Length: 283
Ligand code: ADP
Ligand code: MG
Image (tube, rainbow, N blue to C red; front, side, top):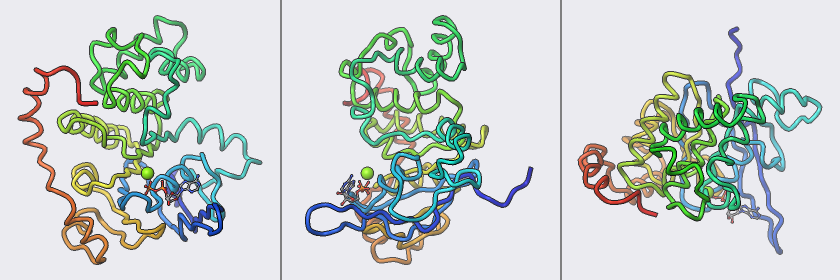
């Protein structure tokens, strides 16, 4: 069915935090959208409002004003409970700090089996383990048996980040809001994970809001998509990723570009062999 709405739309979003004496306008009049199979990179310095916008898009924070639509429907209109439940399943937010988002008293098995059992993707332990083994392999955690009974504190930062990505994949999402989701990973693992996410995008049509402060990462994952540059809550530049990177119009974008060393995925692959000799990815 051809419809003229996008998968996820931000329409005139504002977020004002009332803290202390002054109000903080953390997100200002943002209009953006992401469609199926598309990647929208959101870049900007720390504190520019990227996570706040992503949480608004993920249904985790109702904005001060503006509308978020998923499949053309206002997600914060609680009159549409059906919209909400399909939204919660289809849109996954991968937190920038996996330590804060993984329950410390749950094992990897419990973390990943809960959504699978709740939504009846699998029935029973054997089926759950089979599906979880696939998910862990997809994020490079093998053999699965070495991770199933681990608690978050028993893993490195990079391993925890991969568990959160695996959790986001449990329910075959249509859209992933990845908030600095690869920032804690060793470069070679990061390249592998981004390749896997690219496959989800191109083969399964998963849309991505890809947040990073690293423009080289955006160039690597989002070359075929668009890029929005955020500064003090405002989108100051928007366009095809490579055009923004190769011909930045805004001074702030130029400053961001100057701060970033060029990514070298080939170097990453060459380093992979060396990494495998060491144990795990850096915490
Ligand atoms: P980014 O992800 O780009 O680093 P954030 O969205 O986390 O930026 O934060 C944007 C601004 O909003 C920052 O100044 C931050 O301190 C502030 N902020 C974020 N969340 C809250 C909150 N819950 N209450 C008050 N201020 C907040
Ligand atoms: Mg953030």
